[in-house]
Length: 96
Image (cartoon, rainbow, N blue to C red; front, side):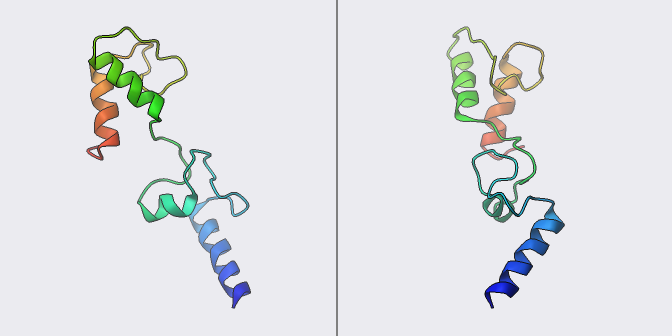
């Protein structure tokens, strides 16, 4: 029975495109199975990190921030602006 389940798992991984040798193909900190179960893309780490959320909240608080190293600059123009903040917060709230 174990071998049958293992074969099924490899077939599922192949269909989805994830790497059966890695628990987290896109290296975003979430297991592929969890991402599939939650309707997320296990091949793309397009999620925002806590650093992105903190950056967004700093912008809301009126603080000057440097977006280097975060995805909070959603439109990739080199600045974290209010439209970026709204986008980040909508993404983490599941509204986008």
